Length: 470
Image 1: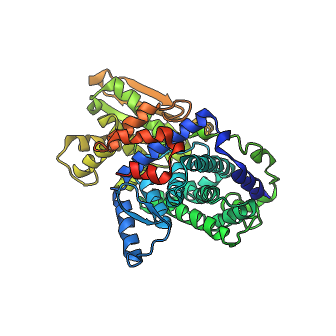
Image 2 (image 1 turned 180 degrees about the horizontal axis):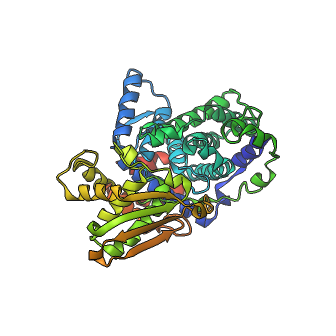
Image 3 (image 1 turned 60 degrees about the horizontal axis):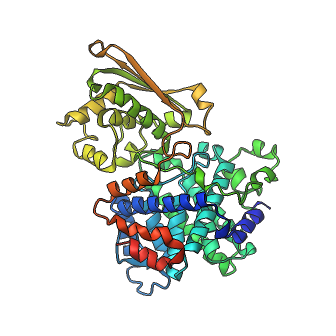
């Protein structure tokens, strides 16, 4: 059975097997996660989630196992709630790490679960990192197995596969045996959820997927430890994950699901393949943003001379063609606005997005020229599905942006193409750039606190969280 091999890997993996490259990547990912989550805790959706949890649980003073909520120094709650809340905060800014082929944000479902258990039990940094590496491996493996078909059916992989990822991390930290891990992952599979309609409708359901993935994965591991059983055929069974949430029935019945080729890679950890994000938009928009930035360098602030803009890209990216976003959640999924804002503003940050909203970006009328220029560019923009570029997806995420200028500004055509956005391992951010991202998100945070991560394996995670969450 498929889960038997996965469970064997989870149970048997040891920190000592990790390469230096893997360890350094996970350290960078943890720093990135913490900075994004610390700032994300101030957004509307995490604040609403915090208030809701407080409303439901505030009469329960016996917390039992407890863990910290990042961005709320000194506050602790039970580990289920901590993992839930930290997952929402991690995903709220659209700046958390992910994996191109797996099509999932992995750190947001790994680190909240790992922190909750590691802090509550006072586990070592070594155990914490060991579980994080396992989480990335399982997430990449399962994400690549089901995508792009799973995503094309309308499922949000971060919520669905993320539940398995959280369950794998929790199982590792709780030292479950192979049979218990099978049960835990079986329970994860029956709770795996997340519909992309929540994303593209501009709702907060997208971040809820992440919080629930952490909650359900962690709960599944604890249930399995106490003898609760889950289906060991939850992946490949006749009514399992693949048949109901990935493949059509005819396609499923016509394939051999021995998984031999898939499972050959188990244990050859591919953590280095994850990407980091700089732009606070959906990752499918990043190639277009990077291309627009290149063109911005050519035309400078002469965007008023743009007659029209064509964005040719792969189908999934082109489907993010919302020309009238009504809130920040919709804005972060809007390809026309992402390109227009970039051509006017250049590098875009959370703060600059918030300022544009304050200046009337979602209103029918604004007195701010930049806002009106952005809306004017959006009205001149065509989003085009390009068949040749689509053939390169999902291995690449290409975008070709073409700008036609009027006769007052050289009457020229400027175009550029990006095949893989900045931040993937082919074009990585170095650690100094991730530290700069952390500082920009959290300007009042004492960056020297991060030094403890360099030697994290020699500390208790209780002490690490205490030193970081201040």
